[in-house]
Image: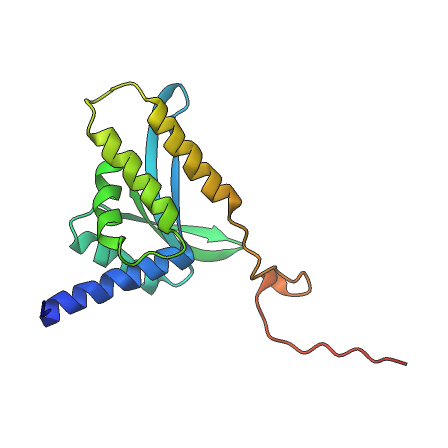
Amino acid sequence: MKLDNQQVTEEVRAAWLAALIDGEGSMAIYPQHANEPSLLTHINVSNSDPRLIATATEIIKSWGVGCYNSKFKTRGLDSWRADVRGYKRCLPLLIRLDPWLISKRAEADIMRRLIEYRLSKPHQYPYSEIEQQLVDQFKTIKHSRHLTDFVPDPRYYRGEDKVDTISESVD
């Protein structure tokens, strides 16, 4: 199969967005309301560079997926976030990113299975044991991920990953 330039461009955009979500994004499944048993799916990506978030938002919206942006402060710095919430918004995004996700692959697969299962049922259908198992699997994956490649050094302001040589004199 030969791809034209537009198809190649769309594949590159999907791969770029998947990489951004793998590195800077998060996926979540959580109760929508405290008093009701309803779940909300949520995919977001945040960064202190507004150009990254604007580009991510433009790609997501170009696929017909609803996305909204917000600005917030983290450690006193401005940051921006692109949010996609809800089954009918998250599913097409997950489908589009499927070939490209790496570190969030397992989370995406479980979220997609949950959404597809839920959308196959009538509205307000009671949650099943299958859905509870999927949510439990999702939580297990989230809690088992240990980020050991970077531990902030308290000697640096805001824990930035700086390359410094610290020499100690040995007498």
